[in-house]
View 1 (cartoon, one colour):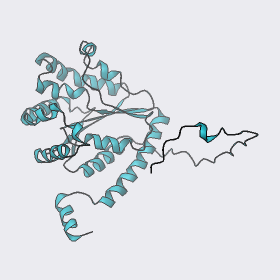
View 2 (cartoon, one colour; view 1 turned 60 degrees about the vertical axis):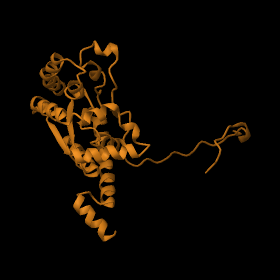
View 3 (tube, rainbow, N blue to C red; view 1 turned 180 degrees about the vertical axis):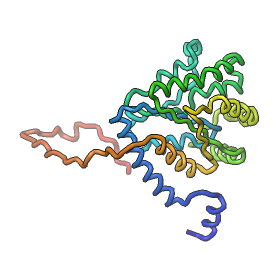
Length: 270
């Protein structure tokens, strides 16, 4: 590694690439162990990811789920509520996504939309907003009393780093879709979002389900710190199945494979 590169890494506080890859690979093995524990013990786990736009929530979620079974660990990222859903109890469509025994659900944004974007952008009334602040702590206490393990993460990113990431998305055609008109509007309401977050924390940072703030100015450090913390929230043991011995393959016994010319193969361009 070049000397200038080492100096730059030291200044930025970013972990070295090889160290990051080694750590994230180690954590993904542990996440598989945690997954097996959740499955066999019939646990119900909910993990909420909230924070500023471009704070890196999606990258952390991808890192967590990379090696996991989607039937056990699933991601929920609900879109805009339908006209029917708008007439329902606010928490109703989120309740439908809660885990059964042996499942872990990762909410890529959650019911906290009401305390953030809906409140700041005027998508809900002041009465609906105040009702949410009253109901949310009780709703979460109810979830915890029912046996659900609820873990909440807030990804904090500085104004300067967010702007840097927005510009990177604009310049990269493969990431430009991540920038919505709502994201751009949120830039002009930075202080309003800060006030909304502070008000939400004051009410919803409860002992039964506290907010865990992740410093996300460095994406890689945020991933490592978040996953390390998550693994520490659920005591688990290694229940990895023992190595499996493959049985002998069935003999052909007169089976004749149809001509390959009868099948449509993908052209081997590479």
